[in-house]
Each structure stands twice: as structure tokens, then as C-alpha cells.
Length: 295
Image (cartoon, rainbow, N blue to C red; front, side, top):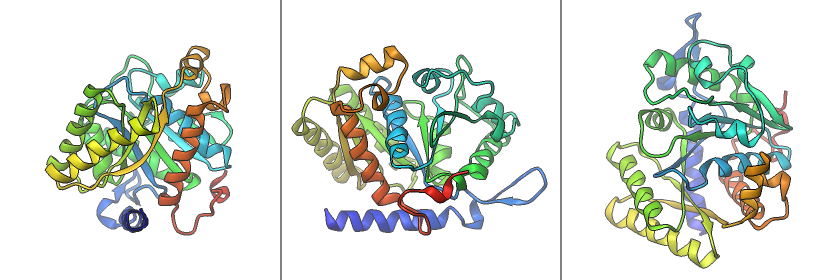
């Protein structure tokens, strides 16, 4: 594990440096260069829907926030508005509006302390975006990202152009699966897509809704081993979240689990995952608590 952790830290260091490279720079409306995001960006992805990806995004953000770490959560599963529902919020502007030219500042919600949200909106889908719309959206994220310790992007399930754009821009994939056979198969397909697209990433894997550590570890081992053997791809096992009936209660109450039942087993898993990510993604020059990123 020590060697693996060292490799992950080295990879993250190289990734953070690459985000400031001129090759990824864009131009704003005034013709000035805009660097890629200066905070780590994590694309939360899954091979299929229904694996608990959005709940993981929301509660992971709150786990960071509990330690005073400021987080931007982007709901890029546009069209379904799940993030704003879990926070019981009603946005005036969404990801779509930012892509169309609305100021990022005006679109951000602040549903909880240390957590800002760019909502996806309901009923408007973001399957294919042209270069102009994508650049506006990414420029908005890049411009505000220095305020945050990290940016979490809740991507739509499956493979799509938006996810590819995110990864090519420098976002790091966190792949969510469950022990269900279909989720494992689709999770492997997602990893294969990354390999076929030559995205050059080392995904982090989270096993969600596992009944025990043994079940989670077995699920992770199957995917990690298959990726190494058949795809020549390294996949890091980031952690697992226990199957928890309290999650259903939290969704019905429109309150994130870490706030409704903070002592539940799944809540503990989210906090452990947050610690794992922070240890491997802390940018140079930022403190452990991320206080310097506050407004």
C-alpha cells in the first residue's frame, strides 16, 4: 500500500502541474488566457445509473465541509436535478445557463457551509455541447476554483462526450460501482472506454452499497485485477460505503445523510473516503483545512 500511495501522490503532483500548462489554456471574452482549474477536479462516474453516485457526491462534499474544507459541487448529470433535490434547493440559474454565457458567480448556490453547488437543472439535457458552450462552462469552473480545496463533478452515468471532455481537461475519475453483477460489468466497460480513448488516467474505484467489507473488497479486487490483466490499467481502490437503509430516509427527507443521520454506517464510509482523497489530492501550498480558499 505504501508503494501504491507513493505512486498516486506522484501522479497527482504531475496532474496538478499539467493543469497550469499553457497547452490547456483557453481565452476569455477579452482574449486573455485562462488556465485550467487550479483546484483538483474529480469526475464522479459510473458505468450505469442507480449505483448511488449522486448521494456519494453530496455526502463526500459534506464530509470535506465538516473539516472546514471548501468544496464546489457541479451537477453535470444535467436534466435530472438530483443534487438540488438532495439539498432541497431551487436554483435560478444552472449549468446550462453558464454554458450559454451566464456568469458563474450568479449561478452558484450555497446550500450548506463550505459547500457551493452549480445545479444541473431539471428536464434540460447536456448530452452534446459544442466547443463554445464547453469552454464557457469550463472557464467558469476554472475562474472560481481557486476558492476551493477541490471540485466534485457528478457526471451522468455511462460513457459520453461530456465525460471525455472533463478527463481530457485534467479531471481525475472516481468510478462508482456496487457488488451487483450488472454494475461490475458496466464498471469494467467504463474502464475499458477510458483505455480505448487513451485518456491516460489511473481511476480511483469506490464500491458502494456493499453489505460487508469482504463483499466490497472482493468486488474491488475483481475489477482491479481485470483492469490490470486485460487493459494494462492501474486502478486504485479508494474505499467502500456500506449498504445503509438510512440513505433511503435521507432521500425522502431531502436532507443529505451526513446531516440527517450523521452516525450511520454509510456516513462513516463517506468520511473515510474523504480522508483517503484528501491525502492523495492536497495541492502544494494549501493547508490541510483549506481555510485559505474561503471567500
